[in-house]
Image 1 (cartoon, protein in one colour):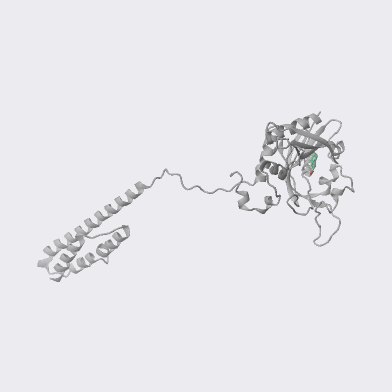
Image 2 (image 1 turned 120 degrees about the vertical axis):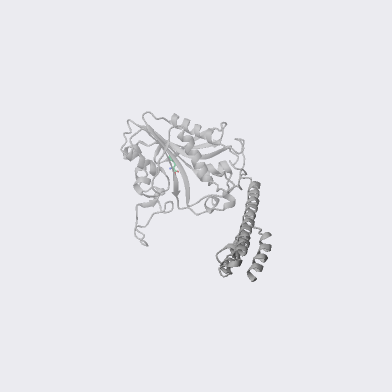
Length: 347
Ligand code: PHE
């Protein structure tokens, strides 16, 4: 009775089947109970059993299948329980490892801060193209035709035909005052705008000069705008940017597009005005140029200079950033060295 022996052998085995995980358990199920499994094979053999033995062997076979199924389902429960326990040990409320965020570029941080300060006194942002024409950068801003700024030494001109060096009026803007001319020709006063952006000048690259840098210029045009308004706005900006103790000083200067014109110094924020190597012992550092918009500029832009007046100012973002963060070499701003950039506030 070979079948009976086989059944008994398997009956002994299935009592203590073991599985450490779900994969091993599945392997057991396949080995015994699947279509090609050992128990199924015995059921197939059962068909050939003589009738007088069918009852006994049938019972034994059913018992075998029953035991195998019970054992496998017990093992499944044990394995599920083990999984559950290890899930319980997972603290799902734990803060995950921090994702390393990038940091904002110091020039962006300072540009945003400048914009933020002036926006509190009503300035909005205007932008314009970096590739400009002579008219918007110089012509409408009262530059004389032979003004040295229009020289190849100072301005990057763009060849209209590649490789053909002909006089051209297409150039990379050398200041964002070009955006002011665009605003003045397209909007009616009152105008109160800030013009942030990149500008280009034909300079040899060194720690103190670069062929491009960033500016924020400002323009305010309305009835009865005076030099006192200009001074108040700039004093407010300086105190907000560099601290409430900051003093300002305006020195007469010259720009073709403003009259009168001035350069503005702030009390040195490093030595507090006592004199140090940064301010070369003077206690003052220059931060911007400014003045009352020249009536010629207003007229060139179609604004009645008898009715309206205005002020304008322009500052270099790199310079303000140097003062705030003491960055000594301008080149660091454009080299994208992560060790340098990482030192600034994260976004
Ligand atoms: N456009 C000037 C410059 O680039 C700055 C400036 C702006 C000066 C407005 C006076 C008024 O240097």
